[in-house]
Structures are given as structure tokens and as C-alpha cells.
Length: 81
Length: 147
Picture (spheres, each protein chain N blue to C red):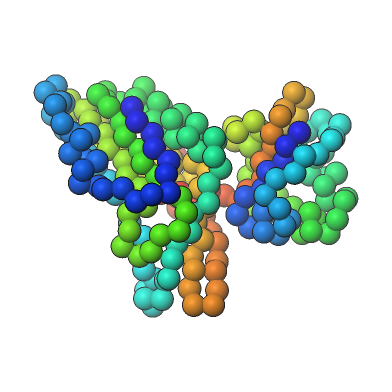
């Protein structure tokens, strides 16, 4: 699936988007997989309460299932308007 | 209903006039424009807005559709920019048309409250020698509870 990062999450991880092959069942499982890869992921995901997640462009929670998902995005709380 | 996400500046007056034109059945047109505000120290060089193409348009359309189901509205307009802009430039606008003003005002406030914290935009402030992401405010999240 495609994993996207925005704002300071993108800066901390160092890229806007990557393709990841994963068997993760939930968003939280995917986060754990990423954190185990490299320190920059662990640093970006250190405080999940400071992050929001969207699966297939819909806001959801970290317990959301990933079955059939094509796109997961991580970002800080939004500041539009 | 019209949802526009663009990097180019927009002409608030022209957009408001076009939105209000030929509405014989709408007694109230409410518009709001958000403008890049300089810092209190007067040292803001630019505001940069990042967004999530695709999700942004869908989230704005969803918020506007919710407004239309909650209030009696004839039409809704949302324009939101992304990219780099300087103090004094318009960032975004909403407009609502309704038979009566209460619906137009309330729906415009609802749209503003929701697009502040439910539409995927992120602001970064550029000052001399530094750039900082704007943190979301608790009060913006709290503002949603009144709806």
C-alpha cells in the first residue's frame, strides 16, 4: 500500500510517500512495523496522541483495520481555515 | 455547491458578487474570508500551507454537504488556497446563501469550525531564519462540540 506523510511527520521521516508491502492488520500494527525499521520512524511516531491518521483518505483511528486499504496517511492535527 | 482548492490568489469581491448574483429566492448571503495575519512582532515573512490532494476536496465537500443537510441553504461556496502566501493575502473564503440569515450565519460558522480541524491543511510560518509548523489549538477542537 501507499503510505503518505504530511507536515512535520513528512519532515521527520524524510519523504512524502512510500510503497510498503505489509501484512499489518491495523494501523497500529503498521506503525509498530515502521517504528521497528529505523529510528526516524520511531521518532515521528513517538507520541500517537499528536498524530492523526487517514485510511483511503478518510479520517480514522489507530485501531482501524487495513484489509483492502490502498492508502494510509499520517499527519499532525490539521490547521486549516 | 462549489469547492475550490487552489494555489493561486482569488478575488474575494468578484467571488462574492458571482456567488450572490441572480438569487431571487435567497434573502441572506453570508461571506467570510480568512487572511494571513502578521505576527504581533511584525516579522512573519510568509505562510506556507500544505494539503492532502484528493482528501482535501473530499473533506471539504463532505463538510459542505453536512451543512446543507443541517440548515436550509440555497448554495455553499468554499475556496481554500495552499502554497506560499504573505501577510494580507486571503487564504480562504466561505459563502452561504439561505432564505433567512440565521441559517446563512450558522452554516458559515459551522463550515469554518469544521474546516479548521477536519480538512487536511497544515500551516507553516516563515520568519527570519526559522520556519515553524502551527500547532492546532484545543479551542478549535472544542469549537466542534457546539454543533
